[in-house]
Image (cartoon, rainbow, N blue to C red; front, side):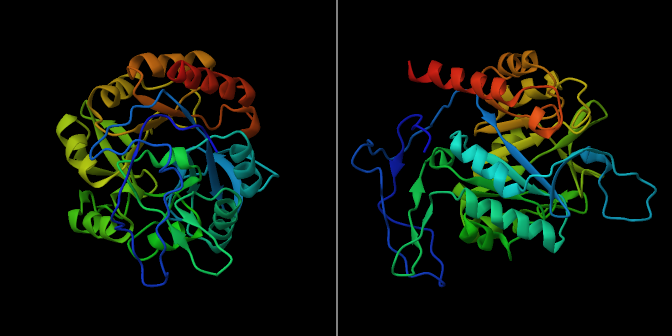
Length: 332
């Protein structure tokens, strides 16, 4: 398990309940943690690993070329397809102690769902514990950086009906975009429903965006449709009340290895009141430092197509070493 990055508080009153389970509250770290009623955890900049699944295979795809329509004339651009399974990548991240990784199903097909569940089983979060008595033992933590507890965050077709099933399969969080930003508008009732089902602590809002009229608009439906929600301090502060983290792809540069969107990173660093991860355009080790600087040390980083494990030229071992250095800065 990765080392703890700060103090967390344990809630004495569990709020995560579901009728399928006979619950037993467990607090595995209570003897070593100081309990506080309210606490903000600030982490060093971290590398967040990713696994993108398309038709059951691990791939790196230019996200803006994805589409639900077969007749829209858009050609899917695939940068890489791996011969390794999603579970093998999950095991790699588990062995390296990388947390808060994103497992994304780029399609609702059964093969992608099956591959995702296998990956969740390979690297489950520690919010749910198995036991010899056949019951699920669930620890509910309050005011916690869930990522210190391991596991993967899963996204792709998540809604209030299926979200809990992925938590039960081992996901630390569910990642949601299109279900909440429907028909170009934010559906607050759907967002509230999700919070009721899985809890704020288990929810990541994907606020991936594209530039429109000089502002960053959240895009949905495989990044094909602009919403009427634009990222700024007010919007981020409001949405933080319903989520544990934000995930933001700079769609204009994502998958193209053209460099990062520094303006977007700076916006996130200035205004996000909760942990936020940026993805898009990372090509060199220098880009990691650019994100660290532009985001004022408050924005985590995902790297996809540029990594050598996904067919790129940027060595995974070098990115992992950089990540480890950031961890050391925090602990020293």
